Image (cartoon, rainbow, N blue to C red; front, top):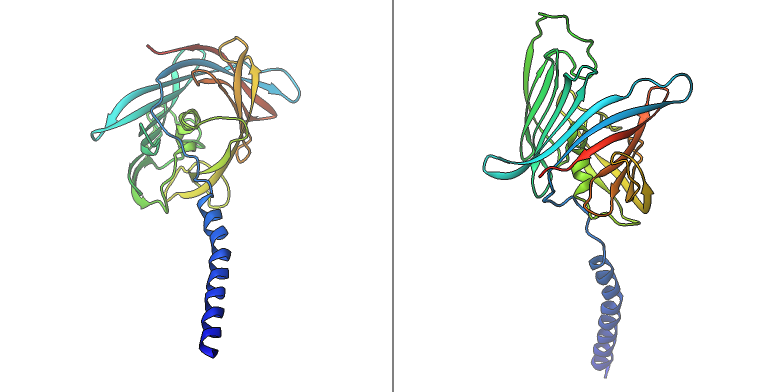
Length: 275
């Protein structure tokens, strides 16, 4: 009789334990997987003007920008090559940002910043391993070099702490275009940074990896680069104080705003879809 009572108690205890565990397992299985960029993307060509709206004083002349995304390959892998350019008033290119990313995952294979005066920074990515080659002067901060000036070239290899997107290296727009945009979508992505505590371009490795948050709302009707009112998704990136508007149909950039000196930049110009 005593053994029978113990057996019954054990069965009841086991049943209660199972009932307590089932909701926990179910809740864990319902945790949403992170939303990551997913290719392929359509190639594009854009000719734009960055317009500064100053907090006070006269409005400066617009800055002309070019942006081209095309299909390519990297060591036998399908890839996307993005080239962003800053163009002077006479039509000459004064700065390039080039990124090559995996066509499906958008993770980086190659990135390069280059100035017309010869300063540059380029990186080749092999998984977490990075080979960096750069001029000894900072490609983003150094004053313009005098004609004929000589600078040293440095090479370094380092390892990233985890897989990360080269958002600040020039791959930001393709990453957004590759997200399944919808109202209420929000999340964070691992991105390469030059600072371990805040988002900043990495101009000399080793680099850090930080989480960059984003939030999608809309749709909103916006008139920007195309010059025509269109329905868009609004993507806020608070870490950088950037706001993007991506068209709902045939996703492409329609507008973007970001902080500038004594004001806010926005984008205007015309889009020429690639064939």
